[in-house]
Each structure stands twice: as C-alpha cells, then as structure tokens.
Image (cartoon, rainbow, N blue to C red; front, side):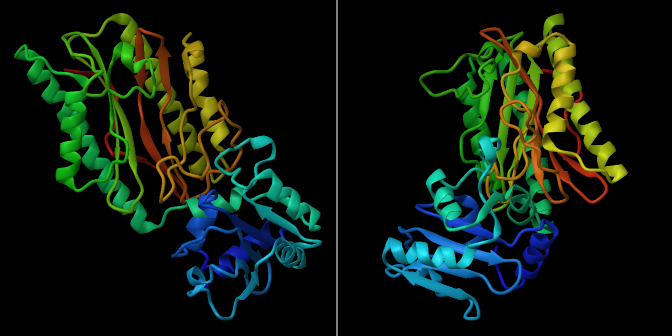
Length: 392
C-alpha cells in the first residue's frame, strides 16, 4: 500500500529508475494496482489520480462529491478537489508538466496485466506535458511482491492442496476398483468439500478432466456435462486455493487409472522435463545473482516440448503471476508466447510454472508448481511435487 512508511522506498525506486514520479489512475475499479495501493473505502464513481513524486509529498486529485473515501489520507499530503473537467485537467498539468512519469501502461499492450490505463487518459497526461513510461517494474516491486506472512500462508495452502490432490486420485482408484460409476463432477465436488473442511478459499471450482476433456485447458465439468471416469483413463486435476486473504497455491497433477500407454508417457515426460527446465534456469540464475526474466523462463520450458515434437500442441504460456491478491496477478508472468513479459523476476514475486501439451480431442497433460523468487534462490511449492505419473 501507499503509506507514509512505504513512501521512502517508493521514492528511492523512482530515483533508481530515473523517474520524476508515479501517477496512479482509476475509474470504476479498472486499475487494480491503484485500488490495491490506495485501499480506499467508500463509493468512488469519478476519476481519481494520485501523483507520487520522486521528492516531496504525494498529491491526490479527487472529486468534490466523493471526499469520504479520503478520510484517512495523511494531512501532510496534498489533495486537490475538482468538480469540472477543466479543473481536473488544470490540476493534472500542474503536477506532471515537464516530468517523466510511470503509469500502468504497456507499449503495444505487450503485458496486458500492466496495461490498465485507457488510451484516452494516457493522451490527456501527455497533452498535459508529461512523458509516460510503463510502471511495470514498480508494480512488481510494490504491488505484486509477497511479504513473509504471505509466504508462510502460501506454503501451508500448497501442502494442504497437495494432500487433497493425492487423496483425490486414491479415492478415484478405490471407487473404480469397485466398479462404481464416478464422474469428473463428483471428484470436483469432493475436492470442494475438502477445501471447505480445511478452511480454504477457492474462487472458481477445480478442473477435473479425463484425457480428451483435458485437451481443453479450461475445461470445467458441471452436473449436467461431465464424463465418467473409467479404467485406463488419463486424469488431470488442477486445483487452487488459499487461506483467507492470502496468496493462492495453484497446482496440477496427472494420473492414469492403470498402466499408461507409451504415447501418454512420452507426452508426460515432455511436460515434466519442460517444467524442470524452467525450475533449473530459475535456480541457476538466482544462485549466480544474475537477472532472469519471465520471458526467458517461458522460452526454456517451451524449447523442451518443441524438441520432443509436441510444439504445435502448446496453447498457452508457461506460467502466470500470483500476487498477494489475485491468482492471475499483475506481477511478472512466465510468458514469451501470449505476451512479451520482459520484467525481471525480482525477490518477492511469485508465479506458476505449468507447461502443457494439448492434443485436440485426444489428450491434455499439464504439470503445475509455484515459484517464489528469493534473494539467492527460488522456492518451489509444494515441497514434494510430481516426478512421475501417478499410477492409480
């Protein structure tokens, strides 16, 4: 959050980046970075700006009818109240004219998770006399990074859902061995019940999919549209959950009800080895103290799958940001496929590592773990992640 205690760190980062300031903007909650940084309480239906200068005190530009949410704004900081657009634009120009400022903007929409400010607002700020650059690195550092409490809560959630996933496969095996009819939706419901018993929040329901359905990465069984799970089926379980108001843990596990065929093993090994190539690069760079970017990790994972002959079946990036608030966060993504995320994976940022191969109407295989960058290493969760197909 933007607080008096955090302000010196933000201003130091602005100096390091040779920026004059960071301009936060929001309108109807379109910019989660601004809403997360400010944590305002109350009705906000008009445009707001907050300018954090490299030196001096922040200034908020606020609408006359919406002063309640600003009651905790520090008295020493500036606040400009406007009613009409002329007042707004005059106040904005006074703050930013002649300055080089960061905003939630990504040139060419290279990183959509940073590209939160409408083009018209960018035009208005530039017409006010400012040079606008991307705030992507600031977002990583001050919005997406975890603290020690986040890390501890995530690790607990990761171990809990690992146990739930393994138990789910065992339960499916036992039911199938008794020739009971059991469906993807029934497994999904069983997992949700275990989440509830563990006090975990989950958002969307987990993915439970047999081979052909798993070829759709976002397949979602329902009570009316679900497949029965039978002997020899390949089964994917992708599940995510968190302790209340803490970061998510997000994992995918693969199993087979019986002995797998050669093709399934080949696909699984390509995906597993791609995941491990990503992890190896992260460990190597962190240990050496050299920068690593999300795009580089994505390239390393995809290269393995392409070398095994499955490149045409890659349909999504290797991983997404997991920030303290969102499972698909605004920090650096492990992505040089869907987008061009060149941000550095700085200490404190977290992400999924989940390469996959999706052969239409035939087979989908994904393996997912989570990574958290440290000062000299990367933490991978869960502590014991999948090394071989689960033979149920």
